[in-house]
Image (cartoon, rainbow, N blue to C red; front, side, top):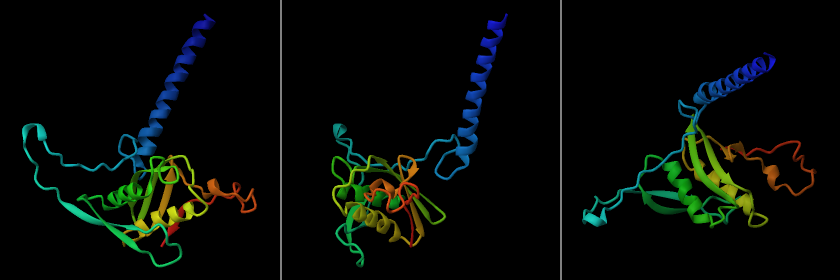
Length: 195
């Protein structure tokens, strides 16, 4: 009789664990910025108009817009932007970061990082990156930070940015070579910048 009670208690424990996990996902995450009602993170997707060549039907000419990408080689000086024509989109920030990473990234990403998505909420731009930090040189992290910041701050609607790497706030201690003299890793240096 005792083994049966133990098995029943284990099954009840597993069911309670599943219920609590579901409640966290659907109740907590669903109310957080950047998550839909099911607790899944929202990723902005753009629609692309394609031609149906097989039937010889041509689509209407694609509308375009001009976006501006900051110059990577300038630090501490006035920002210089290069203009690019991209397909028209309601997600101008999303299109800007797509192009920025297209321009500056290699097959290994931009310092090992890849752009995933952006959420703009009450003047705060939350930029989501994926990958593994691998700087290309001594100042490559500073150039990248400058580019990502200035790409957002060119828009009046953006007051501050938060950059996330693999769902966690980006901590610049990842690039610290001081051996603890700069306070890392005990004092994180999160990538949260304001105008």
